[in-house]
Length: 243
Image (cartoon, rainbow, N blue to C red; front, top):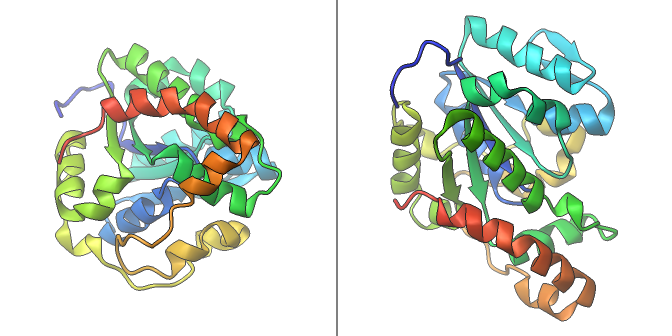
């Protein structure tokens, strides 16, 4: 990626819920070369505040300011999920253009099944692929370039090749030793630990049996949700790196 003086050292990974973004963030933490911030936008919407560096943010605008402030001293990686809508982010064209925004996707039937298991009263919009695509479109408009997208199935099937391709695309070194880590619940996951239980038991990118797509197809409500989100996923998937 070319150097541009208007860029800031903030690398973002945006994801619909249950698309394996926490595992990717765990790998980024293992690298040890940047501050890793866990879901600042969704936390400030859900809980009313979030710690970002040495600041406590209470609004989306606070989160944006805090990420910029932390990045003055050290490169930042944050990952976040689109079970909420982020109008302040979408309105901050400078941040959309200056940070490096990347995206991860998963086959939505599997994501919906996993999400529904944790949230039985799941609503259509919080599945998140439409809002994910909205951020993708906003970043593309702000930068004039197609953002980096990875498919989490590629991440599981070919972790080294996929992470290497990602690193090359965003201009950071590939560190193969970061592809494995010690299992455990990290401190930043404690407040939402039930969402990260499966990742806490991992030591690398591994596929688990049972995607749940059949249950989604058999449930009329979930099937309607899938039909709504599938076109957004397909557009994002079409832009995914080919490791």
